[in-house]
Amino acid sequence: VMVPGRGFLLNNELTDFAFEPTAEGGLPKANAPSGDRMQRKTALGGDAESVGGKRPRSSMSPTIVMARDGTPMMALGSPGGRSIIQTVVLAIVRVVDHKYSLRRAIDASRLWAFNDGKVRLETEAFCKCGGEAFNENEYLKSGLAAMGMTEFQGGKPSTRPFLTGLEVDGSVVRAEADFQRNSKAGAVVA
Image 1 (cartoon, rainbow, N blue to C red):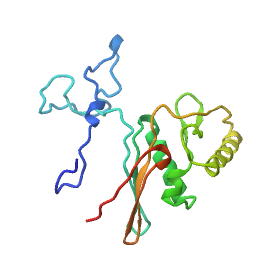
Image 2 (image 1 turned 45 degrees about the horizontal axis):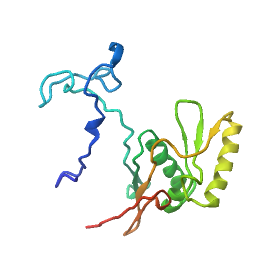
Image 3 (image 1 turned 180 degrees about the horizontal axis):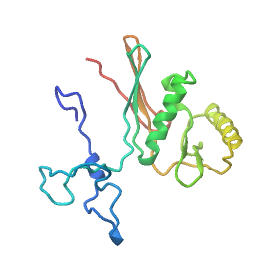
Image 4 (image 1 turned 120 degrees about the horizontal axis):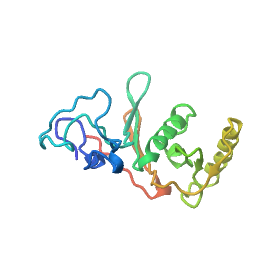
């Protein structure tokens, strides 16, 4: 939902706050008030669940990439929990550093590394990306192995890393989506 005249979107990220401030055993939850954040009462009341200073557990990262001259180059984002940041960053690196089009970056296979020391490489069982994308996986594997990473897992990630974006080329804005991963995109320019 876009807030008229304000330039920002409302979303459902407040659901990422826990209703209880502590977990079993009395330890504070990850989204409890942290650091030097000042706790403040909110309109909901003064109970422990509604004080300010908390940070929701979320990887939400809608991103706008600007060209060196300050003009918009692309905007992209992804659902997918813990795979969001890696999905978005990988696409940006492919466009900015490797000169992929946004379409090619979205179509390319993906990889993720979480806190278990394993690298997950997307497989054809999850993405209908085609042979070229999976040849890139072999290139990625050899580069990661050269850095000492040798434990790889295939298959799909635990969450859906769809990626959608807008690519700006002068006065043309193209909407791109993850057709291999069953996603859609659209753009309206007013």
